[in-house]
Amino acid sequence: MTIYKIHENDNVAVAIETIPAGAEVCVAGESIKASDEIPAGHKMALCDIQEGEQVIKYGCPIGNAREPIKKGAWIHTHNIKTGLGELLTYTYEPAGVSEPEKREAFFQGFERGDGQVGVRNEIWIIPTVGCVNNVAQAIAREANNYVTGSVEEVIAFSHPYGCSQMGEDQEHTRQILADLIRHPNAGGVLVVGLGCENSNIDVLRPYLGDYDRDRVKFLVCQETEDEIEEGIAIVKELIGRAALAKRSTVSASRLIVGLKCGGSDGFSGITANPLVGRFSDLLIRAGGTTILTEVPEMFGAETLLMNRCENEELFNRTVKLINDFKNYFKSHNQTIYENPSPGNKKGGISTLEDKSLGCTQKSGGAVVKGVLNYGERVSTPGLNLLSAPGNDLVAATALAASGAHIVLFTTGRGTPFASPVPTMKISSNSALAGKKSGWIDFNAGVLVEDGTMEQTAGRLFDLVIETANGRKVRSEEAGFHDMAIFKQGVTL
Image (cartoon, rainbow, N blue to C red):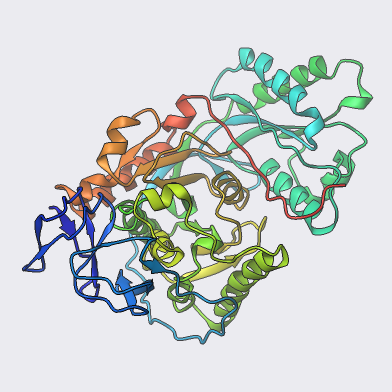
């Protein structure tokens, strides 16, 4: 396969491999001569397109022609521009999505005393403020020498916030920290505070609700003579208790998976993202939950999600989700559609619509069952939408804070980053999977070679279950654990 037409109504096709200028390619039974070199992942015009006319990909507009475009020409940022406006008025037009037939699936998880289930049995050290990041890291380094039983690792998560913040910005920091403290992938948590910060331990405790006092411990550095020595002693106690936990068979209806992409390319919307969408549908059939985020990368494809909302209340919440983020951009005097990134463009993505229509395919075809604010924990099984930016580390942390046990991260360019939970990298093309085998966990590039969607989605589903059972993803094997909180307000 040299070129791929995604939808029957498209007036562009995507080059699967670089097409030299003058080469003849066959699209839907028609022979077309490439008038320019078409790089792999980039688009070729299938007919003459007039200036101002819509360019169609995925069966939807991805922008308008800046100038007349001849059949066979390379279409990219030089001759296409976004067709998006700013705040829009939306109408609920239900898509009539049917509920899928249920199926059973299971994994081996850790049952927690509060009714949650985890896919890891780690000890987490969470600072309340960036001032004690190094203390937390020092405690973790030493405490890992005492790991035993079913405990897998002691991990300290650093961040620069917790003080010098105001209003909603401070509230978001407190909520994310509380969400992570309660996350079931941690068999024990040590919360390390300084003592004088805005989000000190006494302030943070009420955000935890009714927590397990044996599982969550606290250390205020200003109140102890040797905070590292005392921290190690507390973590040893947490390890001793968590080491007794055993995995047991759990229904996949209790599994929560976050959906994220980054460093996308022209193959992402053809291979990796639709594959993750098919996985999402499979997990939802098993009664499980998936969470889609990165709201700015829904712009241009938002109506596809809105019309899959289960009811008008969820539709209205999705409209607010979209418009709140647009207003966030405007309040900072920034262009709403300042996307895609340089790497996206190099990979063949030309406009935000082009990117969004590929990105939102990670949601599959399921009904939208929930819409979550930033920092809100998921409570409704099925497909949920989460308010968070496109930034990889911030969005993946937000998914973990909302309850995701695992994050599926599709990429066409590659990245080594991690998040507080296992972050599985899915490549959109085989070249990346071969080049970066230390980063990539699963290759979706086979879908433009010899792999079928059904078989490949089944393999991905099995790999996610294996990961839930304890199989480490590449970033975990490398010892990577990242965390990032959405900074929105002033710094004092």
